[in-house]
Amino acid sequence: MAEQTDAGGRSTPVSDTRARRLALYGTAWVAGAVPLFAVITALWLAFPTFGSTGTITIGAFALAYPVVVRRLGVPRRASFVRFLLLTGIVFAVVSVFTGWGNGLTDEPFTTPRFVTLLWSHQDPYVVPLVFNYVQYGQTIHSYSIYPYLPLLMFFQIPGLSYKWVTLGCWVGMVLLVRNRFDAGVYLAQPYVVVMAASGYNDFPVLLLLTLAFVGFEGVRLRWAQILALGMKQFANVIVLGYYALRRDWKNFLVTAGVSAAYILPFVIWSGPTVLCPTVFADRLSSCPNGGTAQYLLNYAVWPVWVLAVFYPVFVRQTRASAATGWLSRRLAGRRPTVDDLLRVPSFAIVGAAGALAGVTVVLASGLFLGDSLSALALSALLATVALDLWVGGMDATGVRPGRLFGRPVSGPRFRLLVAVTSYLLLAAFVLGGAALRLSVVDGAIVGASLAALWESVVWFASTPAR
Image 1: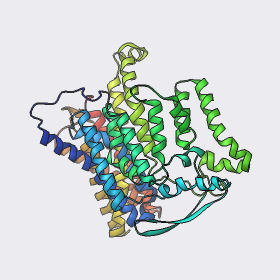
Image 2 (image 1 turned 90 degrees about the horizontal axis):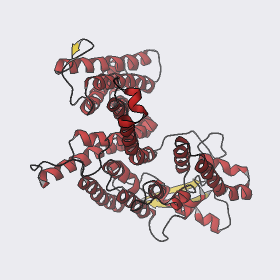
Image 3 (image 1 turned 45 degrees about the horizontal axis):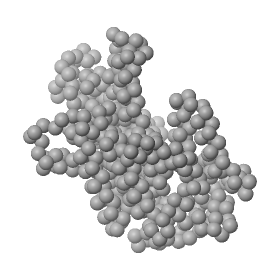
Image 4 (image 1 turned 90 degrees about the vertical axis):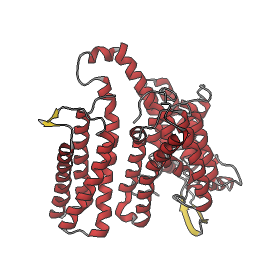
């Protein structure tokens, strides 16, 4: 997770030629795309095996993408954000026309069509939308109740594919943060552009929220926030949380009132049954059209957006408080320092991504190796290799000389000790769970989480704050 300096904050060596810089930028883009498409491919081939584990893994890697960029040594320049934007546009256009890396959702077909129910005087929260559509040669039958807030169905350009609308919103969002290096890297990364090209309906809402909290030419637009509150429930949660954390109770109540006002006409029209789709997006099993709550592929765009917009501001304010405010008095002469504390989110995100990578490898290995104890032991080994390469590669750079737990902190022997301990933790829970006839995925989640926690703590303790 990049810290606080915006674009242009660090000079580039003269030897950094344009060709080398473009090669480095391309490597950074590929580094974000490869894990994404690897897991998406696994989901396509064996969704019952990977399920929510795969989609959460994609989200974790998306959150960790700025760490990858920093570890690759990409200079903090606005040109990198422009590279991500232009590369993303080229990829998205090819994707929309060819279907490569596309077709991940039905939202570009269903979201703009719900408004036809209103034009025919039917409540889309009660009357299902039933139709067939063709996506990349495949005919798909759709049956759904509208699960969002009312304004979202109106955000469309008649006659234009909704995928171009969402892609345009993504471009606008990135342009608004183009001079903020950290935010630009987060929002222009491959994961986000793949979601936009597929037509996920989060992007009109995220564009409005960006206008509201980042602003246009430095001016925040309150009307954009008000519109966003009538489109998708995640936006309401974010805005309410923002004002609650700032203890701005006046605007908190205004936000709650505006949110309720969007729903009220439909409650009057069809009764309280519409509260399930409007408030909970029909994600509760108790809802008439609800089902089991699940984590979907596009959900990570929301925490990515939150970190992009708010985390750099939080870092700057924390550093300012550490220099002159109450935090400086609290931490004066103590460990951990503010710099240590600000490293915690980066290590936590990298560790979570490493744990999920390990779980994914265990599940993938099981498809080929089977579920015998020897096969599970080998699966745990392969998972440990993936976990250690990721966590160690992201966190172990810059290890300082010294001792940790009574052993030297540098050299291949120490690295091997860390990896062996990770394997023992992961294998113990995978094999132990199998011996007790528990789910392999449950054992893998516990074991990989402990292994990732172990490695994160080791590398956090043995690397200095930058």
